[in-house]
Length: 248
Image (cartoon, rainbow, N blue to C red):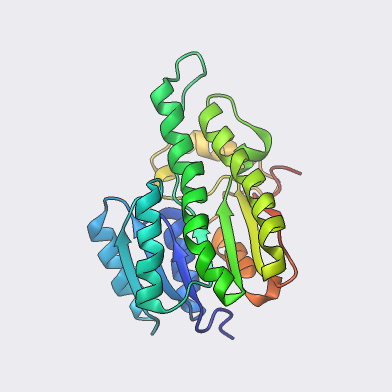
């Protein structure tokens, strides 16, 4: 059974990592996919080709969600190309970690802009279409760090915690129009980025997780699938922790 048959999803930052994992699972479930990427043109082209094999409509857009005008343009381009926007996954994000003592104003601002302002930009950009349709599911990618904080990540934690407050507010504002808004807080997910880390450190992290393993991009994508589909028709304003029990 294809849970997203005929629905159109926008996924930001999908050329690699969690975003790519979400795009792959969504395509398998019949969703047409518009995804954004920042610089990796080759990876984006490869993903477009891969997803089209599922028999769905796919288009990659080089677009910066942290730029208000670009977000507006993206939404209107997608409506023109696909005819609808049923699902928005706000996934684009960066880290610029440092202790508060050493963190620069520029690094604080940049992380807030890319991780948090992009969520505002994209949600505002798709709102008109979803209101007209009187349906939609918005899913914002937060983090366990946004829930519990983390030393050396004041900027990242602030941006991801901000997403949680934004999510709840949007759920309250748009619920009467059948537009749902939820957040996902992934824990330690093993991606290309974590593969570069020292194996001993990674193993130490795995040991501290109740399920004794890092998560996969598919683990996060499956949670997104639930929140994007009609299976979660009565779920809004929630944060789903996909963390192997880290926050338990």
